[in-house]
Length: 342
Image (tube, one colour):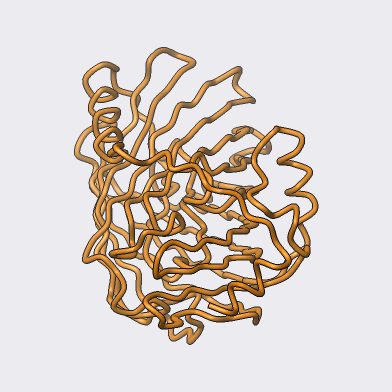
C-alpha cells in the first residue's frame, strides 16, 4: 500500500530473525516448570517474580495478567512504572504493520491475603505518544551490539500505528492517547506452600480508547509456583490460559484463547541485594497472522532488587529485551516499589 511505501522511504528495515520456526516455546516452558516442581524443594514465599508482560502497543487492550505482589497476611501494595519504546516496519503477503510509538504504563496493585486465600486488584494508566527515547535506544543497541532493525534510519520521536490485512486498514493512528485501562480482579488459592491457583477477570471501566481497552470482560486462569535450589538461588514460574472478549481495536481478529507464562531465577547476593532473570511468554493473540509482531512473544527481564531499601519497602529496577527481534517491543525500562502496609 502507498502509506507503507511512503513510510519505507524514510526508514531502512532489516529482516527479522525467524527464530520461532519449528519451536514450540510453550511446550518448552511447561517442561521447565515441571522440572522446577520435581527437582527442587519448597520455598515458602509468595510472589518473588516481576509483574511484567509484553507491552506490545497494538495488544495493550487485551488481557495479559500481571503477577500479584502478595504479602504473607493482610494488605500489600505495589506501584510499577514501565516505559516501552517500540519501532517496527513489517510486510508479509497481505499484511502490513508500522509500529513507531513510546508507551508509558503505570500499574497500581492492591492485594489482600487471608489464610489460604489471596485477592488482587490491578489498575493501570496507559499513555501512547511519540516519546523522547529514540536516540537513547539507538545508543543502547549500539553499546550492546544489538540489531537496530531500521530504527537508526527513521526520524526520531514520531508516532505511527498502522495495520492492514487483505486490503482492509484495521489500525491507522498518528494521535497520542491516554487513559485508564481495564481493571484486573483476581482470586488465588494456596494449593501448597509454593503453589497457587489463580482465576482473574479484566473488566472495562468505560474507557473509549481503542489502544487501551477492548470494551469487554476477559478471563484468565493460571498456576504460580516457586522453589529453592539452595539458600541463595530460587526458581519460580507461572503458566496459564486467557480467554479474550472479541472486541476492541482488532475486533474479530483474536484467537479464542491464548497461553501465557513466566519463568525466572532469583539470586540472593546478600540480605540487601538480589538479582533476577526472567522470561515472559505468550502465544499468538491475533489469529491467522504471518507478522512477527503478532507471533509467539518471548522477552527476557533483567532486574536488580533491593528488598530492604526502607523498612517494609522493596525496590525493583529492571529492563526487558526482545529475544527474537520483532516478536515483542524492543525494550522496556521499569521500576517497582512494593510494600506491605499492614
